[in-house]
Length: 263
Image 1 (cartoon, rainbow, N blue to C red):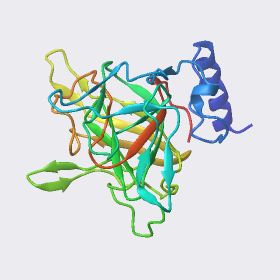
Image 2: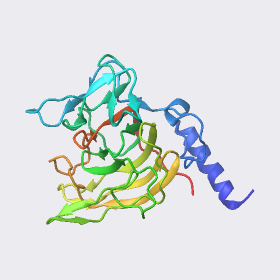
Image 3: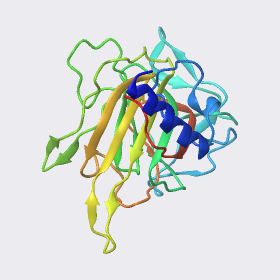
Image 4: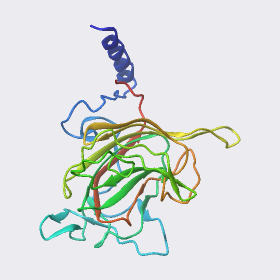
């Protein structure tokens, strides 16, 4: 047994004793983690939008739940649809142009798992703490160098009319529009001292896109473009972008951040 293997075995044993499983770094490709590991909590109740609210209270919230999402590649490739009734999927309205959807709950350091699908050419985003975006985009088939605006990218900030920072995904693993795709995110929020001064920036420790590592140890020093109008804090809500085109989400789960063990 190698020294690294011994270390992994020892640390895994310590975490197991604490009732916490170590990060396997996406090496398994079976069922999603919330079915295999303890501690995951759902953010969708399978019935309605309880626990979520529209970001802008003065605008209509057209998000709805549905038992199934329909995509027609030939006749309406730029649309997603579904029956408006109790269900485990959520869709951002009939046109994909509605308010952002925000959790009522706030989170600190967290692991997040969710699945999403978009129509052809569509765009959304998952904002950890309502501020730091993992981009959702139809990047399928792109042969161009990856950008921060591609699926799996950490979106750039927008300062004085210019894009700043961000992190492009390492590889393009996007599936065709209408296909379900997954993100698993390990996120560490910003740190503040006793006076409230920020002493450490937020970090995306890892992001798996369809089970493939696309981001690792990415620091974000402030809210990325189109973030919620809120200050950085130890705890903030999760936001799903709803005004950039048709998108649907399902199987949204979270749990407190674990120690990371892996390569």
